[in-house]
Length: 269
Image (cartoon, rainbow, N blue to C red; front, side):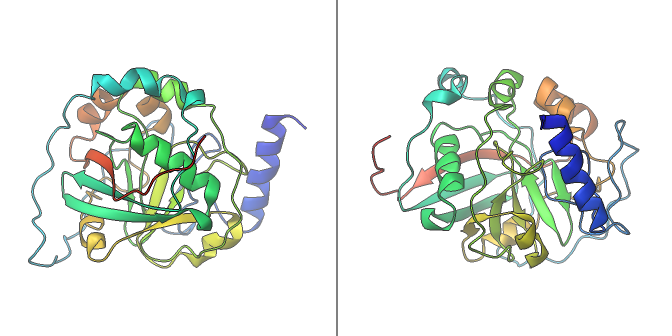
């Protein structure tokens, strides 16, 4: 069975279950509900009026997002060769995210989803997520990121799919998970659950880590005003990079850097 036919059958199965995806070429969890999260159009509509801002803890500073710095050139060459980035991750490691809304840390336990944990480890180690945007923010559902700011790097990783991990942990609030366009299509995009999304468990979304402690206070601050149906087109973002976002969606928040912290020695390749 060819890829297009497989994708069609998978999409038809999801529709039969009452779930609308936002496009078979997109890597993401399905919309939360067909009533409140309509599918994206090829040409995004005008930005929706932002909902009233929720009150945030006083300890978190809601600074205005700023344009990300230019990607670190020293890592671009390595990222252009995905086949070489296959190091086995430590059994447990942490990733610190410094964003335009503040900092948060993710703890990854490899036993929960080994293939996903290994892929995420290699991406973070080589700074794939630095300067990437939180391009999809759906209130009370997910915050999604994982398209590199450099189109050449995005192109290099476009067909680097890894197989699915068995789902051993639930998509609870704070769980970080690889997005997908169907079975065995995980590449670089991930999302963080903003609430208990356990319905995603049966659909093959395997969490591989969790946002630590009060870090969700920062995650929940990512700009959500454009809405799920008027956000950027993922294909164009991959092809044009961050300038595409700054032109049409300048308020989106970004990752300044994502770095490994307290990682124990990794096993050999």
